[in-house]
Image (tube, rainbow, N blue to C red):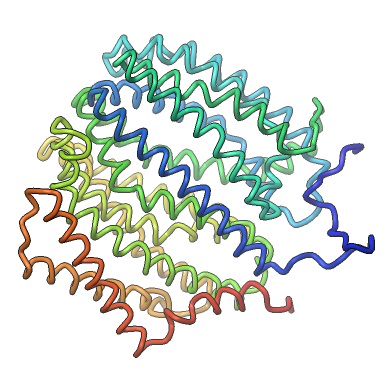
Length: 504
């Protein structure tokens, strides 16, 4: 192939000689820093956008847009190829596969856009919302454009070049924020959300070619496509099951209770899973390519997994507790009184967010080690449990009942998953879950402290005082605990050793 991949070229020192590549440690740590920075900036903008739009638009507007995105997500998932994941996971040269993958990506995008346009009346009929039809038909433009994104951008993740991924994600997010806020102020309708989503699509396509030198061309190889799909089919199966789990509740709730209830539920999900979503994306983006590089070394995988698990627990436990404790006083003040009914669902879904965060790098571990069927099996069991519980729970407790059904299936399967994980890493379950003890104990003491203090939360000073008291108590207990258990202080060093020790 005539084109060269910039990210795959060896480093050259000042004298023109090829120098050694940076250690995997340095690349993982640097990549994690860039991913974290990108998520921090992107989430900050999304939070501003969410607060502004929630005050300008109604839950029903958010519910209508949720129906649109649900329909698109469903069709996107059922046409998922898994090629990008397969290209990242492969340890040998993948450059020869890029043009075939890009050709399939374009065909898929165009077919998918046609399906979105044609299925719009069916979606409107299912949800009894004719207003969703024109919204879907406009959004299909974004779907078609997505197929033309430069396939070379996969090397941002494969080679841990996350500084470029940072720019690639940031620019469309900024554009979407600006367009969304301006149009929401002018239009005061769901169309502001549609045009904001549409504005990011052409920006992402143009930026993908500006930021990466690879220039794909139309090419088809049946052998290459078949080889990629053999791995990607399990990613497809897992993605379908994840879709049904993550959005099946949305579809059921929207059908049963209407767009306004769907808007409340989706807002509850966004707020309660804010830390979990970012941690999941951060950990998954960094650990998948790193695990792929040490996929045959159980000892290094075990050290890496348990070290990252400890860091995730220390971060997720306090964030989950803060969301559950302070959703009631904060949501009406920040988003407005129309969003108060979402508070109970936020508190329940915070538990689900906690579980998602803990399992954020289990899926990447299975896929990186050539076991993409395991996540699919686990998701299938979750889906069965959700199907059994969601109707009676929703009928009994409405939006909060749907949230309870989601949490119940996740708790059961996550507990069983520890046994399979311990077998794969050749260790005991206690070797993994012991890292939860100190953060949970610190959170319990901190929660007890604010109940004893009993500072009223009827005003901002009281809310801020309680948050500061909780954070201070948590930090004090956690730091005191590290004096008796040195593991939290050594976590970073364990990660470094795990991913940088010589390959046997």
